[in-house]
Length: 406
Ligand SMILES: Cc1cc2nc3c(=O)[nH]c(=O)nc-3n(C[C@H](O)[C@H](O)[C@H](O)COP(=O)(O)OP(=O)(O)OC[C@H]3O[C@@H](n4cnc5c(N)ncnc54)[C@H](O)[C@@H]3O)c2cc1C
Image (cartoon, rainbow, N blue to C red):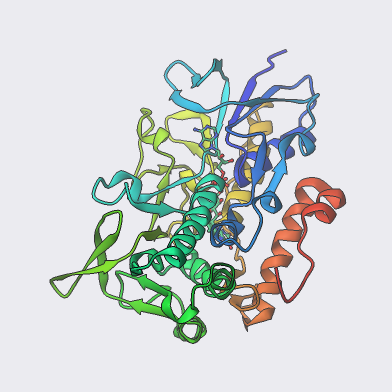
């Protein structure tokens, strides 16, 4: 009997969901499954802004992968993918090479700035747990240095956030809550610290309802966040950032430039021969790559078109998880030579936190929520994910039950 080797790259929302679904629906005799991930843990990207601000300990977002997968069914390899060779159906890792029959790519996103040499050296992306930790350490180091300086260098405590989308405002909200605490720890007066958000559109949260935009701006402004809109960051150095507005270039002394302005699919895809659009792979409705019937691309690496609207599905955890569920079913159908199903983009709640006890959200019935109710919804969605992923044990271990605070 044909027993294909399924290789899943990445154990983020999409990769780990695919693995856990496949271990449930495939019998051991039906396939060999290998899951490859850089680390032995899964981390919750949706909480990285808290880790990066220093308000959530990194270990709270980490879930040991071996606690989740059934190792009798899944061979877990901790290694870094360095090349996808789809012509020869092989994947190169730092330490070995693996052949596959069916490949699932769930390697996540990279910050746009990484590809721009004028920006990449001095910006801090919030893309994975390690760079969230680096940002947290960098902030603390600069606060400590500032407190010790005789001639105070404002660049140490000016924080520029590039991009006023969801990730940018979530980080700004978290930072606005964290700064008074950090100031207290390092003897730095809150009023001297600047948090400046630079957005290239005329408003933050472009495309969102005005009521949301107004609420988010008022909430953040009341906690000291400044906004510069219609402005584009053009250069960053170790102690300053340059932005362009109305044809003029303006400098802000800042050693911390946090990049939340745009992400693209993992650059490994662009280095493969799979065609990409803005760093992502345009997949067909069954989530396979056109022309590569054994390759599924999921989550932030994929450009999935919503069949109803003709627009791309949002790159978020909800899409990553939902696409993984369909991919797992399709892999089983493909092995059994049955018809594959199409990915339907369902209406999902929209939730953005603005710190530990404030946020904005729209629930599935279209009702808008503000304040603690929105943060409660975010915690609820995390808890539901944990329950689905690892049952009650994982929920009790990593769930967030405090409604009002972290
Ligand atoms: C700060 C922040 C807040 C967010 N908040 C929300 C939110 O509230 N709601 C929401 O729905 N979405 C949110 N998102 C977006 C969401 O996190 C992503 O859309 C989601 O993580 C995409 O899932 P994924 O499976 O594609 O990738 P990821 O979850 O990023 O997983 C990728 C995995 O691949 C691994 N990997 C990467 N490269 C390699 C390699 N070369 N070799 C081996 N392994 C590798 C990584 O270690 C990781 O485990 C947020 C994102 C950020 C950054």
